[in-house]
Length: 336
Image (cartoon, rainbow, N blue to C red; front, side, top):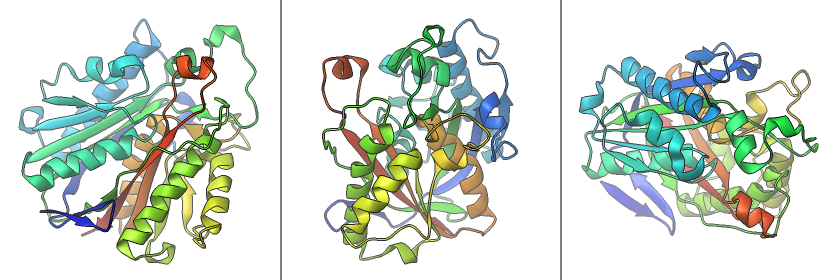
């Protein structure tokens, strides 16, 4: 049964289990600190297809197929799949999933989509609308650069605050199995806009939303950072993480001792030229569906907060001079 906790947090009494998960990553990601933990590595940016967009769709296909295989569930047994990406009309998801014949609900939360899809899948399983549900998300460096900034052929220079869009995907299978990593609580974020307009500084744009959501969660649940083994953000990177610390310290919340960020974990910033870190839907998706869930299953982590952040911009709004609204969704994962 779903219950409301405080003003904005959802409690899951049955705590849907993540019974299977999988991650897919590209060549640059394979060269980073987490290269050995991804389920599948794809070294060709085109993945054998004609376009980067087709390759990204295949990343979702691979992630879902591997998650189903690892969970022992067939596609016909999945009641719903929640999927999204960064491409126009979420074509990475619709083209990547059309062969599975699973009822599909497209999601768009920018880089927060992994947490958004996870919340939606958990709500459907907890509420009885689904026996088994899935979520998946992806991003691709080349397709994202073409859509949001400039085609690679342009040779644009990246600023120090810029982040590197992860080429990767992550997928989860959820069911009321009462064991393993389980979704215990979730806080759906509010849109926050503090006026940041620099499309090359996503961390600064997203940090205020992350601060708002985590403050809401702690208020609703009457908990504090020390109650959790890890507080994981999706892709704030170096700049956004520092901004998040400052914003939370103004509210007397200190997460510095147990915080990490997927965008800081996936690349070695000293050896790989990624500037402020990783970003993209696939950043949170691939790290959460590999390193993090592995650590929970192993018992190294037992109670974590996973909060993916997203910049709700488009090339059109940025070109028109609008600021960048942001969002952050938080999920409390516990080991059962």
